[in-house]
Image (cartoon, rainbow, N blue to C red; front, side, top):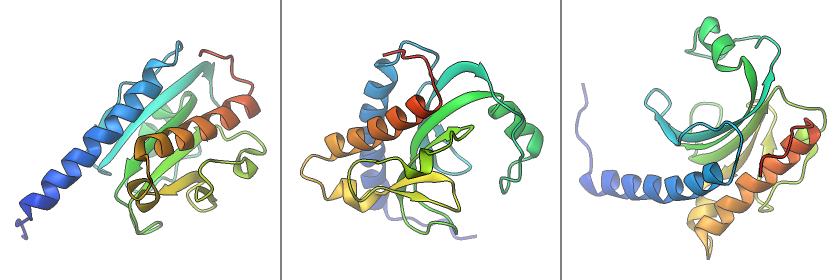
Length: 165
């Protein structure tokens, strides 16, 4: 089994995660409703934060690769808006930030996300902002904040969530 790694890449990845965590934490703290802590999923290697509306959600249909349906049903038992970063997978083979809301309200995929490089990925059913856009921005934290805030605002408005900010 391959176990070697480049220490500098690991240090760079760690520093990037810490900067992302700062943005996610500010987003978390600005919400007066129920919100997850900023957390790291070892399975997908993604860093994420979620906000909840407080309302029950319809039963999730499941079908997420490598995730048992009973886990999905429990994880999505209440309306949730999630935001995060992951290094990519087969469906999107590049590192990216993501944003989604479950259940997805009508019109969400047509919402305007910021910055302009953000787009809705039909297969993943979430908004995507390529990591390189944030990495190359004059102000990376501001760019990431614009993405999170614009996708959350659109989703919360379309889903008629109470304002907790």
